[in-house]
Length: 96
Length: 330
Image (cartoon, rainbow over all chains, first blue to last red; front, top):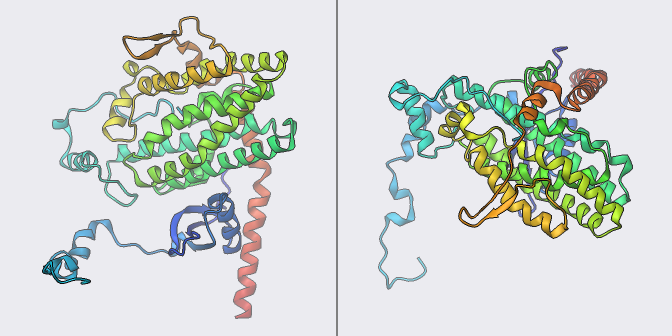
């Protein structure tokens, strides 16, 4: 039954109305980018969830490896001074 | 439920001491409510069970379009027709969310569809019953979607990220389904005696199959315990079924309909409704393929898939040609 002609997989990103960034919502199959956008409209925006759609071939996405998660994010681990809460402020100093 | 009796590949629940260090590490992540994502390490049995569960769920959404699709051309008004089309389209969407969640585990959608058509994977028993009258459409929305919501809300917290996220989407859309069903029944129950009788007849036929949706009693399921440990099943079959009965009986009272169960009564001591024995023989026969519509449903699905083959191929050929033309022009 399989013809070996499965449509490629696309990842779908939707920007909602509130001026936010595009956000990943899921994936779908489509023969090309134009159809991927049309299908994404039908699958992911049936109730006005978006004002803009991005699609990207899943095969073209590169992701960090979960096995290297600790090493990859380690540099940020010991830099608490990057957060404002690191610096104690006297109560009488306002607007800071 | 939409995924009934999902085989975990385990014959019994292993003691914690029997788990390998990797399995124990995985279990401690689950216990700490860490979400598992597709590329994370996971036991093979967890992956296989999830593929089976999510794909049963997806197939149920897709096959579930068939009993309702039968009534699109016969809906009693343009508004009812538009509503039913929107609902059926949602079911298609829910199927697609779920197929894509399963695909993150390394199984292709075509493969899942082939397995369904070959009878290797089930869909929910409920969709093997016929939709004989318009009241059935109301009853499906009210009871079948009601039971689905009951099952799906806890799954929004399940351990596998893509499945949980798909469930959140599905649940947002599902309450419209249940309400449109109840609305159909309210209209019928406030109508003529014949209309009300039609609603009662639909309830008589759908009530017991709806209770079967939650699957066999807890005592009979080894797989449930393993799935619960993995947090891909958050509440037990009997717990969900009881909640569903408790929630639904007062709604039937409001409609002025009678549940087809002489043993149904409020139990003050338990704080729940007691209800009669479910015919599990019927449930197992339907799962084995001997329900009233099993054959029709699969035949319709396979025909749709095969009739659509030329469209899938043509779209690919068109995309390839266009890409080649663009390369030449560049």
